[in-house]
Image (cartoon, rainbow, N blue to C red; front, side, top):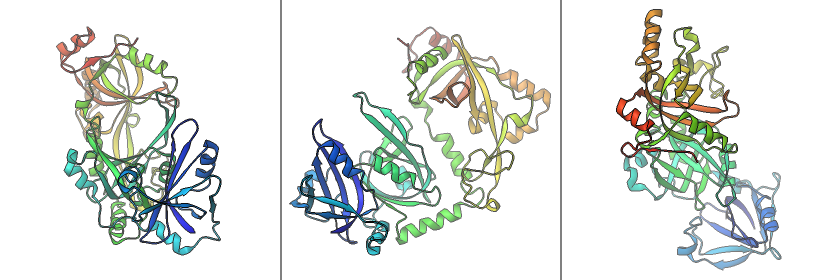
Length: 448
């Protein structure tokens, strides 16, 4: 039978047997799950022979009744009472070439497997908050950005990967959905920001305590329909076009950038020496570190040349624009006539404590405005004397600095430090932290 592949899941269940699951569809109404068990070589070869969206022909599958309650806990919910089992010795899966594909099957790629009206808007998820934690829901949203896949090693030496995609709709301008499996990550890499709409059925919703926000996760039950052809999706496509106008996303994205990380959830206190040691021991695989540093700004060159600390950002995506052409390469697909820029702080500072210095730390945008106590436009009106006075008002003053550190070989110091907040520290709190005493629920980490 010729069918359309809609989802894939591969699982290592031991040193001798592997299982491979995927979902196929041959009509708007009917789709079914397929399971295959066998040796690692067979399963990996089978899983690499086709991708989501391919047309395949399956020969000699075993038809078996499914145990819905047990099996649909981890597999897509299907309207069929059966499932297909593939045997390494008897079953064959053939991929159709582009010339052999049935156009009627290809049209199913853009038809959601769930009722197109049965979904939560991103605003509804945010509004319901933690009451939806752990729930399985359908989501219809546009793609704002697609992150690069991140690779890691688990504690039991298994390789893993992760990719985060930011979604948006008429009700919310930035909502993260995370992909963990190779198939969904590859699919996500094909999405075009601010052009692609997805209908994701059966994603898991969770409250991220660290970021203080709701998130979605692609799981083994999830089936994603790219650019669905539904009335609801068409409304969202119209919104995408409207939001591409100059400045349409700026105000909401500025608000999101301030609230994306809840500083109250950052409680770990580090010294500069501990951060450098942590980087040295990471073997090149340092996960982002969020923490607090009690130190001071030791370099702040804001009174030399304003052009060195103020850069233009794109009003649509907020990325820095090319200074020579004054164009944004990130959203270059949008006509330059419909884009504008705005001035934003982009300052490199050195942070120092009694154990050392972190050079070229990134103090930018809204955080820089809050630290300096003025907007970009107010800063540009300051005389040279007042700019110098502002500089010395901040230099060498003991501060409580919230930060994010990531390992970045391309960064000039190997460590990329983003300042999330920088305010004058309470003298008692700062001195006690230096003595290694616990302040409230904040913990001072010592390196072994």
